[in-house]
Length: 257
Image 1 (cartoon, rainbow, N blue to C red):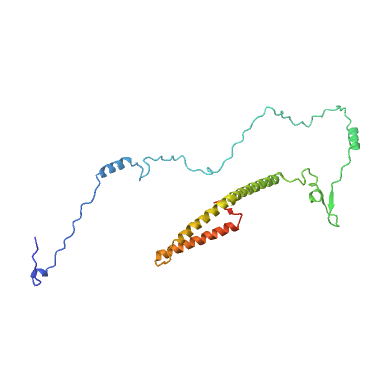
Image 2: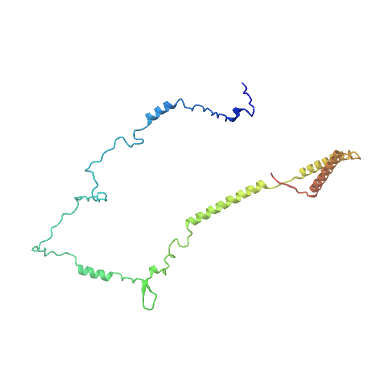
């Protein structure tokens, strides 16, 4: 239905038009919402937010005492050993020692003989480093050549010999690998038969190109003809250069790719 068009002088044009607010669609609610709520209530623990359900109340007798947290040493256990000698009582003042017992060994004679036959005591080696006579031990001074008299003095240590052998082995392996690489990259000498065969093939190609060059017309008035003539000339020059190079050098090397 078409709305009537009013003239600009109409009274209805003086009133402002009514604003029509857009109607919002209903909010989306999942059909699984009640089942999810039910599962969440069942799986939720009792102490999730309010602490544990039952807390053990401490006894008033278990209070913190003084020095209770200090470390304590273990009590020593007295072990009675059956192999120990029986304890002897201290002799009394009225007791008298046993008299009249003599040993068969003559300690005076034995000590005299030991003193006579004993080797004289060697003086301790000392050195004096001042005019006042300050003496010091010679052994700890570093002046005694005791390391020279060792059996292994001047002998190369075992770890050094092993290290040298490992270095030599590594050097030999490195040189062998370089030789193998050089052999692989070595250039191949072209034999006389192959050289002659290549030379004949180049000359044959030059003759074919020259024959095609001779067949060109005398008047070259188009661009394709001129380009074809230039192409044949460059081919002939290249073939002549290759033929001269092979004829000049009798020994030719070919690099291995």
